[in-house]
Length: 141
Image (cartoon, rainbow, N blue to C red):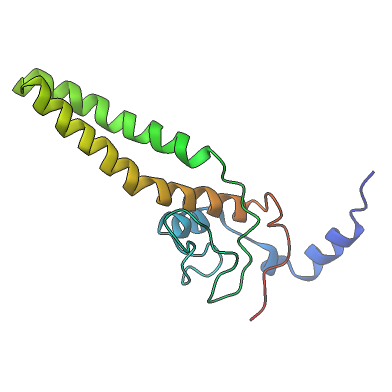
């Protein structure tokens, strides 16, 4: 069905160039850096992924993060804030309005902090696993 001869030849000729370790790529993405070189910024805005890295010229426009970073953000914020909410309520018993205000501000702040980092994490994972068009040979400078 598929012709694997070209990919087999390319992988046999340059096995090191095709190796993309996932952990460093995800860590670079979490730091909002290019998953390939770790030097260039991944984003041109708060959540807008650059078309290519300004340092190594790696194309980044292939990503399909979609709703994944938002779901991960909700998961992480919920798992941090829910136990904290319980501890604060049981130990300190603050006024309901004070508690609601503190936890609203905390949830929003943590969400705004984590969302671009988790999007970078997802894009780094997609790059490392050659998903959604990231399958080409790394760009040469």
